[in-house]
Amino acid sequence: IKQEQKIEKTESKPKPNQISHEDRKLLKKLEKQIAKLEDQKLKLSEKFNDAGLSSEEIVKLSKEVNEIQDALEEKEMEWMELVEKLEA
Image 1: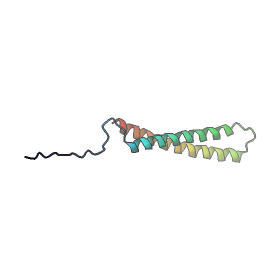
Image 2 (image 1 turned 180 degrees about the vertical axis):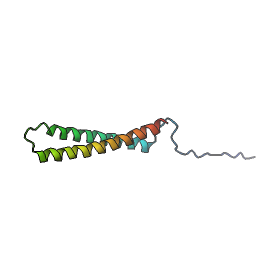
Image 3 (image 1 turned 90 degrees about the vertical axis):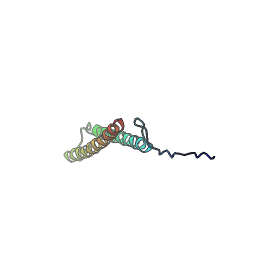
Image 4 (image 1 turned 45 degrees about the horizontal axis):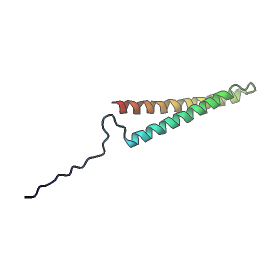
């Protein structure tokens, strides 16, 4: 009498509190992007300390800071959504 052995294929689904490789990779990528944007924002903000800035330069810097702030908020939102998804 032969005994049949069933070999179950286990899919690589992450356990409830386990982060998948893709999610971990995305999380690290977002954290790097956020850090880079924060650094860019800080460097631009420091340029406002120059008393010799013209009004055109101030407007240009303000626009750049606002664009970086918008991008930063977007990345932070993506990061928060991913963290919430992983905690669920």
